[in-house]
Image 1 (cartoon, rainbow, N blue to C red):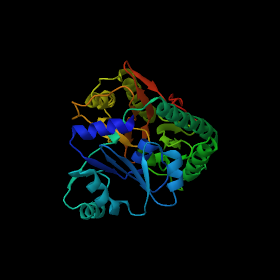
Image 2: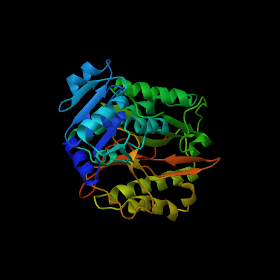
Image 3: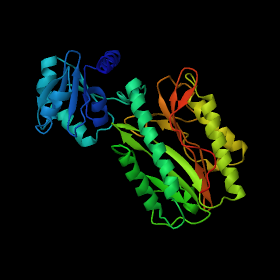
Image 4: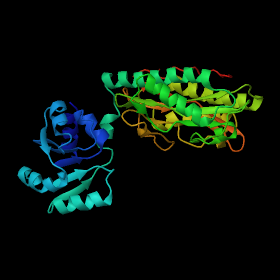
Length: 352
């Protein structure tokens, strides 16, 4: 079904052949999870090329494709394109100039076309199997977070907390972390992407933890901010503002909502609390085989609309330099009439 949808899209955009080199896209289309592979599609043929390390694996995994064993797939494109009488070949946006040059040299006489989000636009919409895998990845992150609450204490370093979470998720059957775990404590919590350091967590620190895992290739991504020992009134106000923004968006999300509205709802809550200048990043992103994938959101995107089956993040934050910050992030499944929150870890203010 995925290949058929992609070929219909090729036909609509007058693309005779498509070369796919991004391994996440290749997995999405074929189920192949090795590290070396290339897909070449024409109207009549589905070709998968890989080297001798993976050819047996590919034959066992991939159906409805011709499997060609080669260490240099681009060099085969001259013959392949000639046999199909094609006039153009399209490539993915992730390739570099060296790849483009080799592709041009290997296919003289063909028009070379660049695509943008060609496969990713299909990947935005998750089927039931994908949703179940993302839910499992979220459940692993939830359980790891609850365990971390018992581990975090004054004197632990940020790196120790990050390592605890990473190994705990592995213990819970994650295949790996979905990005470098962020643990930012004290004043460092004002850093939206403050990777863990050797800084010791102290009594009175806010601790922002942004982490996630892969489960059978699908990602989770969640953030919680907790407090160690105590929380002052200003930070409590900041926390409750961020929580209110996060939950306001959850109440409004549904298919048909514009991307601009998705960004505006939580941003308005933060602005009305006079913290607008301290919300310095986008409200969220898509989630799936990549921890960050389309859609992305901003105030200018008035023509783009949420659709049922998208999995997206809701991550408002307030970051005050030299003071501290708070972020709360959930993963949401968009439905026709609302959304399902996939991350279940508590969001009430936690002091440990």
